[in-house]
Amino acid sequence: MSSLQQDHHKVLAEEQADEQQYHHGRGAQFNTKNRFIKNEVTQEHVEGIDDWEESNLRTQYIEQQSKTIVNKVESQDVGMGYSMNPYAGCEHGCIYCYARNVHEYWGYSAGLDFEQKILIKKNAPQLLRKFLMHPKWVCSPIMLSGNTDCYQPAEQKYRLTRGLLEVCNEFNQPVGILTKNSWILKDKDVLQEMAKKNIVSAMVSITSFNEDLRRIMEPRTTTAKQKLKVIEELSKAGVRMGVMMGPMIPGLNEHEMQRIMKAAADHGATFTAYTFIRLNGAIKFLFHDWLYKNLPNHADKVWHLIEESHDGKVNDSRWGVRMRGEGNIAQMVAQQYKKYGQLYNMNAERWELDCTQFKRPGAQASLF
Image (cartoon, rainbow, N blue to C red):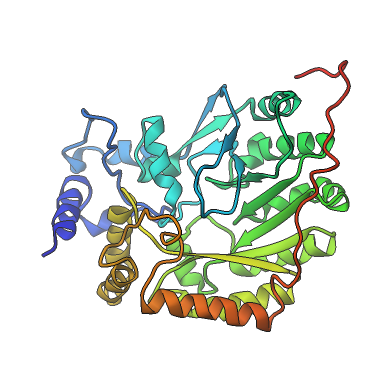
């Protein structure tokens, strides 16, 4: 038995080894240890917490007043210079999500906490306005959802993403959006206005057309069929639309790349991107647990294919390699991406969002 498997079985024994405790509607099934916290409170006897466990699985919205909203992205291979995220943590519960590890910085776990304890940056629009008013800001596109989804269920209540878009529209500040949720359609009016000025583009993430797989791998995202409707409706409204295919997971969904790309193109998408699975930090334990619980007959094959694509490991932090993988499987995915991108006329034109129209309101405008 590998060291990872030994650690995994130990975690299961401590947390919830009983299959009857599977939490449907959640990606993670337990809380991994936060590497920044030395002492933690744990529940040793599951049989005594029936009522506690039921209430403890509910999503909690934790409102806070943040100090900043726009972050400079230092990574060289994610295709963005700045990002902003009105929510920390994500109720979508995608089991592979790299943003899980970031939740540990807030004092929570990358596991169930990431899906249940959602931090709400209530003053996000005000912070953005203050940021854009600063004379040292030189206009550059900002990415919405560089970390967690700006249209996750919390947006239905707080509408912070709507507020951020309205500020961007007022300043003519270019913004890119990445989402897995159809709630973006609620903002079609402001997106259409911004599209006329070429200061917005959006990508919809589609990982699989296999609904059985999506329900367990991305439990609280919208269906692939609905995501195609989002692409089509916003494309017809004049918004430049793209599709993010990722992560591609060997043995699970990498064979769907052509179908996803063709369907997206047929519904109006004109550009694409993809990522290859990597399981850094606590995600490797969460994904391993999820894989062997949900797909036991395919688990060994999938796990070993991921290892083959990262020099014998499942995690990879090397810039230029980590998002694409290496080896035969990763190379095959890259070749498919290039081939079908050309076939369906994706990424055919060079374009960029327009930064020349950026303007600050007059001095009489209030910062808040």
